[in-house]
Image (cartoon, rainbow over all chains, first blue to last red; front, side):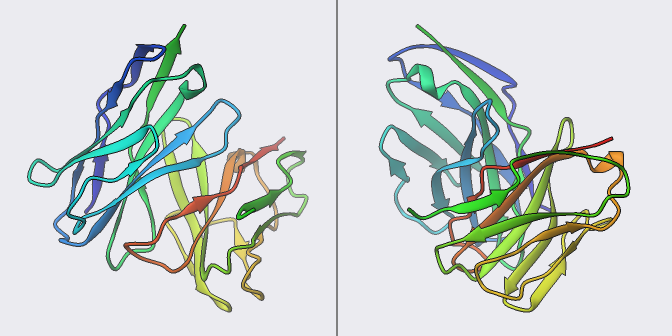
Length: 114
Length: 114
């Protein structure tokens, strides 16, 4: 069975600093995809970044990058130059081949202070 | 603008009064699904649809119905809502099911059943 673990319930960072949100996963399937989503207090679920298990390079999307370490089964999200608007809950999620559902971690609450 | 649109965004209803939460996507996606998000339980899949006229149960389908008559629409029907269906509901879509496809979520529908 697939499992996502986010060990940081909350993180604090100052504006303009970089922050890393941890995510480890467990699967025996060689083909899988890893996602990060942002959920602000208003509730919507915003897609940030995607990494496929066979992708050779780490994914990047603007200020977001995914530090993918396949052997360690980790997919950490790095946010560079944090902004106040980055304060939100962040979820790591995984989809395996042959499945049609995303498995989510419990999330990490990020608070960015001025 | 590419998006997944849910309506209503907020609803308070009474036990037993049938309601429908609509979901529409304008990205010509084949795959659509519904999730609910509850404190302590995370996000759980209710139903999914691989394509028009093809639907299947997710992890928590009891008390819900869906239909997929058109590619763009995937309504969630609560025939007889109960208080335990109070939740934040998300519709999601992707070009196709499976690994390699980015999954986009709607803005969420806050449902309270009293």
